[in-house]
Length: 177
Image 1: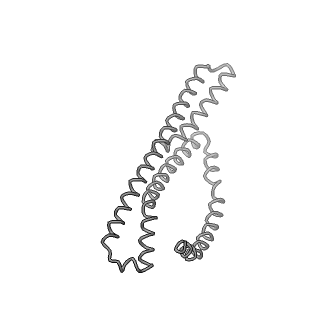
Image 2: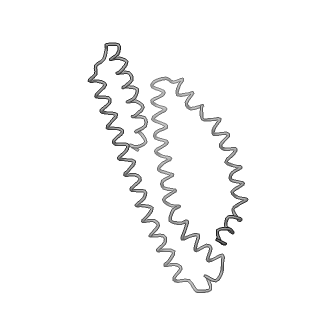
Image 3: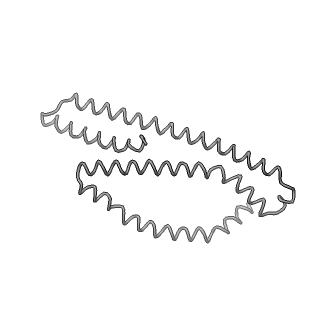
């Protein structure tokens, strides 16, 4: 949650810094105010860098643990199978696919869900900040991505159909390799 608020906090501190610099140039502000805001911005940047590094480390450790756990389960399950199971190419492909793809999927889904939540927090806080500065600017910022969304949706469906068409060919190529 905190990492979702960091971009908004950074933007707000940049606004305060610019206001302080303008006030100092006009003779209404002081250099001390600029230094305080700059120190706050340094703290936010430092916290962001540390939280990003810790998040990446936690994801890598979770990925390694998930990979080891699932591969152990697949190997344990495979050891209980009869030899006839391995003679069937479809069964062998299924076992190989589970061994290769299963470790990455749960962590990828969790990372995507948490990233979506973080992005949602950032989006909501940025919209709140824009509304406090200029409601018209907030409306423009909300409507600007609509054309890109429409075009991306259209071309994504075409890309999906192409992937669906090529999928059996790729599976055969992977099997032969």
